[in-house]
Image (cartoon, rainbow, N blue to C red; front, side, top):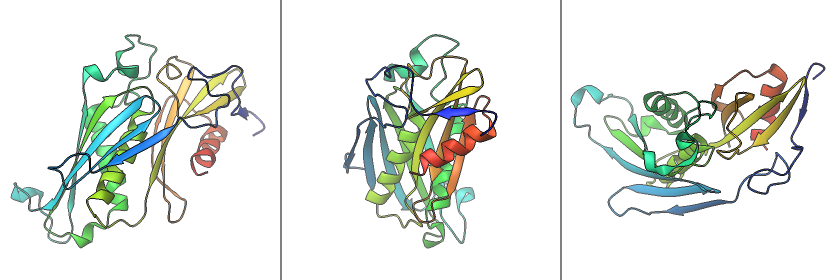
Length: 231
């Protein structure tokens, strides 16, 4: 880390009162929230709240979606304009809910993440649908969405190789130094001097399952983000 000084201690108190960059917001989770879904969960981090529902495993309605040896994972990501948060800030300096990614790109990212963790070969010729609804967006939305989806899959009794955990980290650049903030709020995500990265870590071998990064980030900062997300 000769070129960059990386710290997790902000120069001032964070917008929601947290004193350091390494502190998560309060987390909460409710399971079996929806009676008609095979599994469901509402996951919240601070003011960000996401509801996920799992349907299946079930026979696909379209034959082309069927795979003879394993299940097909389908993800629907819904983010309404009324959910608030960073998407409604109205400034071109604000990082969007998907950090520049479209809803379809977010769906592909979450689908790939889930497929790495579900034992898909246990469910041949079936489809497992995951519907994700953003209830309120106040930063770290994709990580909260992934965590809600994983809990909903567990609630549905889906076989898992491991239990992944998703974490959003914000890197704020200031000269040669960088400040690392774990689980940022929407207010912290505002600015062009920021880079955001989302890591999904594996509970079984503590490796990185998937990663989504927006903005310019140095190798040192990237490695620091991996270390922080694995704690």
